[in-house]
Length: 477
Image 1 (spheres, rainbow, N blue to C red):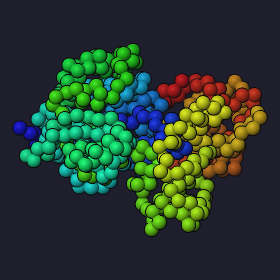
Image 2: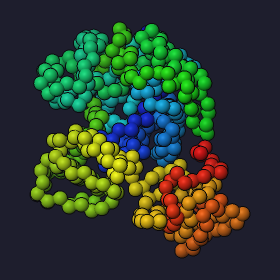
Image 3: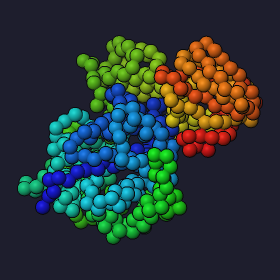
Image 4: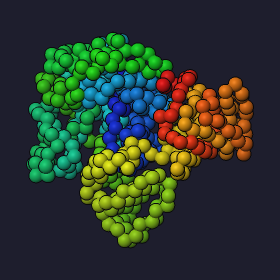
């Protein structure tokens, strides 16, 4: 018997470091935090999907220490209030992460209905999405572990598949088996058989039911995750899972650890528009195509070009006479290749990682975001570097010093409150100051508009690790 008053808590997985959409996606700012097909990032779209929906509670986010401020900032930017942000101390794949979040919710209410979602998937606007949710909710209240199977539209080789036992009297079918990503021939066989669905990586279940199955099927994960939650410590607005406990969990997906072994698993066949955006060709498929089947994002001009994806973040790019092409320009790198060979981007990333001169291109962009704002590297040479700093209203950097460099600050816009040792000054547009090497200093924005600073660094070493933080309101060391 189902409970009509039951509500669902979304658990959003936001810790992935995927680089399959390089050069836009980097390990310090991966695809879930990028604004690719919308004015909102994929993570923000996931949050907004359930905002103010009567079936849903506030979301729980599980991520890692590197992304904690990105998560909080992007949630605030789109006006979504979160229930909690759980921080994984070490990456252990989806099973330990999901079990930890479920244990956190179970301590509040064992009958909580949990809806697990990746933060980097695209879901089109459709009533069929929430119809699938209602069908899954009914099965979850019957103590079933539920997964969402997307009705396939092509013999895709980039997704796992789920085989179901169809039952016309039910809206959630018992699962027969899970299959890994197939080759093309096997994918075609799956498509011919109407019992197969793409594995979306979304799940729904009652908290106590999942934990009971985990305790039986994967006791090492259960013990590690639940103890890590019980020993978690609050840090600002975050909950840090206990590292010693959590690290004992094996790195394994929730599919392998539980769903492929449990007997009470159902799949809800779903027809809503969906993609894991795992490659540039999937972005092309989901994007708005013109009359020549081109998708263009940013300052782009096309001529005699067909079936192509062209993206530029800042620089204007013109493409002439190409077909089946991907052209992506980020701030500091470009990728050009065949659209039909988009899966090979991972090979490029591996080559860059093996090259010490270029491995930074897989980690960070020229613009780096911080909880107070961020900075862009403009120019770098021998013993000098020029940056653009931007500080959000009401925010301030850590109180800090540098052993190896001095800094010159020039205000471009906004009002800067500056502390240098025991001196406090206020600077406005076109005013500047000098911070000697070794001086204790801090930059703050007490104004109502974004503060922009041109920073010129000079010295023998200009690395970001030459920051000695004396005081920091964001808990950084």
